[in-house]
Image (cartoon, rainbow, N blue to C red):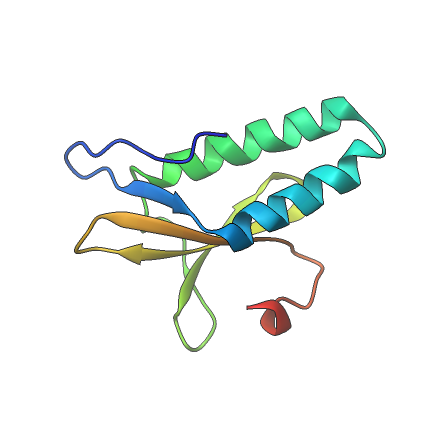
Length: 107
């Protein structure tokens, strides 16, 4: 999965944090028990959708009362939590969590 986005005009760069990488590895390890093809489909779909954030970082709503993160729905019931640094034009991708988990306890 690419780990940076190009800066052109209003396009933001993507910075994947270690917490996201750990979440993705956990998801891949789980799916690997069932199907390598499922792992490939998951990572391809997540990569495509998160990469699209670079051009439209404000398209998803703010999550929770503290407005610390934005939340993007992803395929296979996953949610992406990210922050936008408007000054440096960087999107920090923090977490990849299943929607059925107790999200408030994990953020």
